[in-house]
Length: 264
Ligand SMILES: [Zn+2]
Ligand SMILES: [Zn+2]
Image (tube, rainbow, N blue to C red; front, side, top):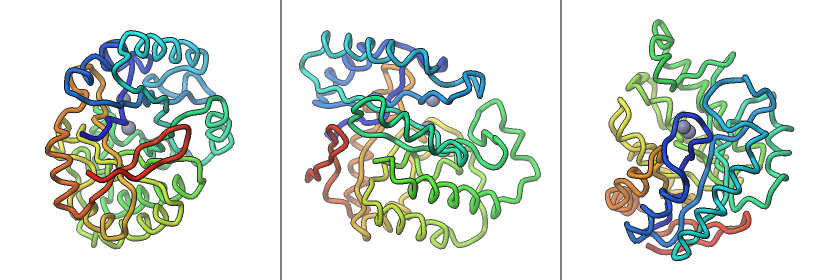
């Protein structure tokens, strides 16, 4: 089973369970490696209320130290799920330098002027939106996030489908320029099984996008996006089957910012 490279901690204020409990669950499932990717701080502590604060970065490492100490059977990687916001590139670079992260996930959760499009409390904010325009803005921003050259993995690369809103345009025309940039930067996309528990009811990204990515020999990782210990490694058997069906024969493992490609 590939490692689970997308997991949160209570520091983000919307997850439960200590990292050591996530690690214990992973051991129980037979995983040999996991990576924690807490929602990274932004320079303004009050930007929103669903991320770790800058002042909590040391506590984050202490919690991961504890998880390591109490679960010696498993390799624990250190990472962040960093929000890509166009005006924060310098901040993102500085976060990347603060620690020798094993990898960094770059995610787009905000569009336009701070529209938190996937927030479950803001579902109404989709009312009246032009879906073709929203999807195209999402992929434009995702491409920008890849271009800054800091991230190793693109988080849930069709999160924009979270509530099931789909445009009628040709999706391949949105995905192709995005995947070309991912290929150019030689970074990975992830199969994020967390989507199954969301209104869209399926993993991110959808099979057709995965097939395109496999054809282009783009790197792949797996993540549960667990916000509670029971969700660690959830639906990984199905996710690996989906990856193979889509044409992937390898996944990436990270250490200290470098990757190796491992066959299934
Ligand atoms: Zn979260
Ligand atoms: Zn995310």
